[in-house]
Image (cartoon, rainbow, N blue to C red):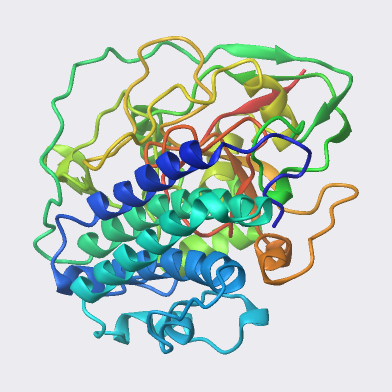
Length: 421
């Protein structure tokens, strides 16, 4: 993983320390409503316990900053690297991912003490650390922001497995918003253009190198698909009609009994959804979320459109503010919100594209364990763009490439359509 793919200046030590404290503090705030039992349980293989997220992001900093750059530093607990390494083969053996929920000890309080110890050590050492270590602290902040979103969605998935469907946060006050009008279309350029990170500020390695792409005549929707539009897809037999589905997608629908987005249930009064504020009626004007790539592709087929390529999406989104939209600013209930008007390419829901997560021309992973960050996952996954309501504000950008397997939908994933012209 390259923290500075070009030559962008990093924050001064004081600025980096302020950012570090803010990021680390938000994570602790997100787990404040949880009991030790809440923070220990693992709801599925794709999700991790809250305690593990808290500890893994701390292990990352302890390993790649304190261990490697601070002379005489002693590990907080020599057992923790085995427990809290994720997938870094160069760092040795680790606890199996699907068994993370079995780590009932150390307790939540002990993990929080571990975080406090490492935080204090990083802040004490930071002014005297070399630039390479500052780069790794910056990377650690961005890495933790990724885990903050995973933490929120993993907590949501866990609570959805509880028969009483507990609310973690009280519902936010909602301002009624009218249903949006029909989708409008933004015509994109038909030309050779460039995508990828341009070297201004931080970027993950998978966002570069910047390179030329050829765009054919196309248009991209000016908003994402709503819950109300998705309900119409369901009512029209969208989940029962194989002609709209990819073969793998149709097999998944039949095998898993999929009839609606994740967390949706149909009752006497219509569709409801489960969220971090409990179960409530769906808002028909809000962006649909928790849908897989297979569902997104089937909906696009049903709607007479297609999913955008990541190049089409990036070119269109580059004209918009990546820090805008409905993104996560603080602990609390997060969910997609109805649009107040105008095209918004960032926030609310990650948008599935029709592009595979593969390396850009000229991509090279750097040497060492952090080089395992993205490159090893460039197989069988699909690219999503734009960030979500659970993405920390300022984390995403037009070149940001998120990626998941086509069946996964526990993240805040949604749909923006495109069409050929």
